[in-house]
Image (cartoon, rainbow, N blue to C red; front, side, top):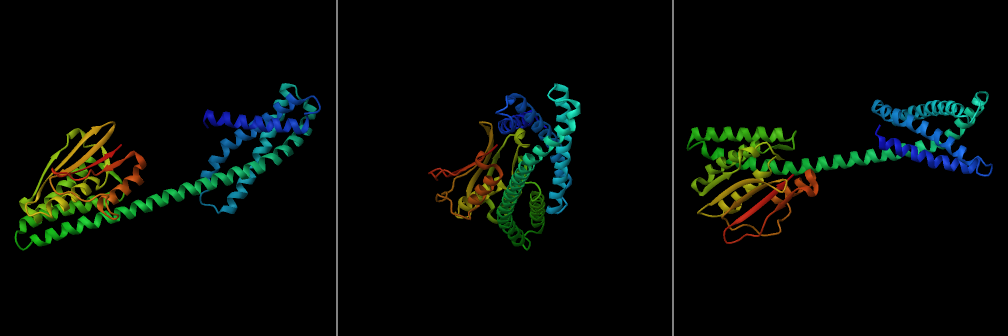
Length: 330
């Protein structure tokens, strides 16, 4: 129970106490005493509800909704009874009432508290339930969207890699075995990524190298690449297959479409509190904007789900020296 919540509860109780003072004693010269007593009732009941209700909610997750409402109603009655008793004793201690009038004051205070607390509690619980359901629905929608996007990423490059290994088997079995080992690593990484959306950059980089080495089976010396990433960046968390998607894009446009192949540079650096990943090549680039369903478009959607506006994916227009795609993540 945070101090801020306590102060908010007391402030709300003060407002309710003011309402009670106006209704019951504003014309009888006891305005301040009535306001103070009303505030005491609201604070004692409200603070008890803050302590009890969240803990009770955690224990009722498996019960039906109707059963939960009955438990909440019973708990609220007990809280009102205890809070009213505590307030009655406080009134006696402060001299606002005598001990002989305790039960009369207790009965009156409990009834008023019941009239005010029950609608307020029902409204608060309904609002909290709606907020919980909305949050759960948004989380499930984001999770489903992310899973859908990732399912479009994984099979694409896995099938291409498998085809490369199959084509190599009749010509060079030992090398085909190496390719299949790299493909197995890709498959393991793919399965692990389903449980962990973010992975260390070092693991992502190993997958990128495996992918590039498999693609070199298809393209031979036409595929040339270089990696410029400092070892101290290896632990930075990045989305699984993010860097691989950028590399695959360069292979598609800079290598596969040209008889001379292409050069690919993979780099990373810290920039403005973020990690900047860049993949550049000497190919002809691609048209902007990126069409829907393209690997970069899918990656941009994944970044939106994972980071919101905190991550960016910039693909500058192709130039005479090639294309460069930059990804920034927190």
